Length: 149
Image 1 (cartoon, rainbow, N blue to C red):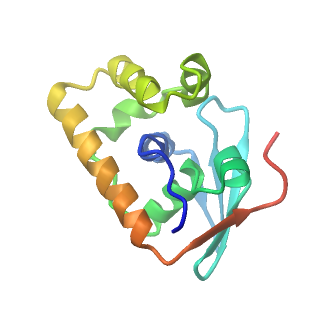
Image 2 (image 1 turned 180 degrees about the vertical axis):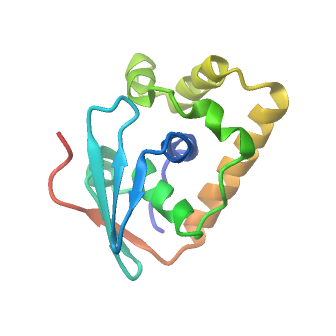
Image 3 (image 1 turned 90 degrees about the vertical axis):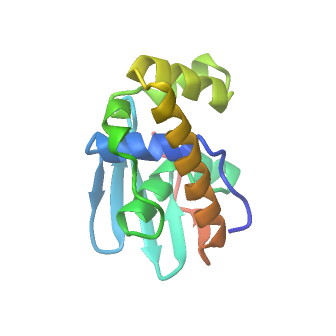
């Protein structure tokens, strides 16, 4: 991949998976947003992934819906055991509150979820591994229609 997402997007993907917000189909997945207001569509054909989430659409990197799909497909490391603690985090609200300072938003989310020091260290390590694995995938991320409203 050419352009990589912030490492914290892995946490958002874990939340979607742990919260049961990822519905996989044949060549298409629907991923619910953290606040329930939107559903993103991720399509793939071979190594080309298309998504209408804001990050994929506007920033040109794999947003959390794409990352969640790649985890489900077994192409990226699986989520840590404690990811269920992140299931109900409203990342949209936190990212707005912290003005897109994703590291600060993640720290707040970890506090809200009650992650201990070992879980926080593990989260950081696995998220780094996830983004490193993403960098090695021969995939292309493209826009899929218009951003979800």
